[in-house]
Amino acid sequence: ENPAVPVSSCATMGNLPCPHRHSRLGASAASASGSGRRRIGIAEVEQNGWLVIFGKVYDVKDYMAKHPGGQDILLGVLGRDATVEFETMRHSEIALKQLEQLLLGSYDVATA
View (cartoon, rainbow, N blue to C red):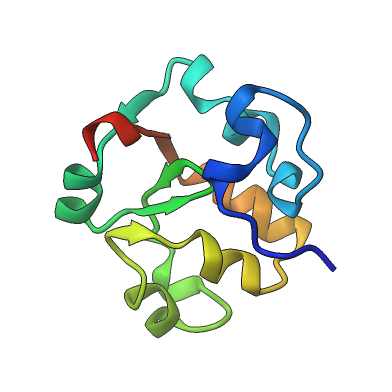
């Protein structure tokens, strides 16, 4: 139903309501930069094997063994922007809540 939309072209970059599926992420994920979370550059994402999804950085290492699709899916996207892969799969509301728990901060494109 909802096409994969790069976060850079999404209205949320200008703090406007977003019609895309990633708008289903909870308030903590949608406003990481305003909630005291830090801004994280791509070098740190790559070094630590974190994921970028819709402009937010997540640490999924402790979750990998629990991932319903298997850890190989996550291993293939560690250390980079996985927005397209995430959007391609249908994730339940429960999965989106679990993702919120793994949030580290906002992706800082200025340090990319």
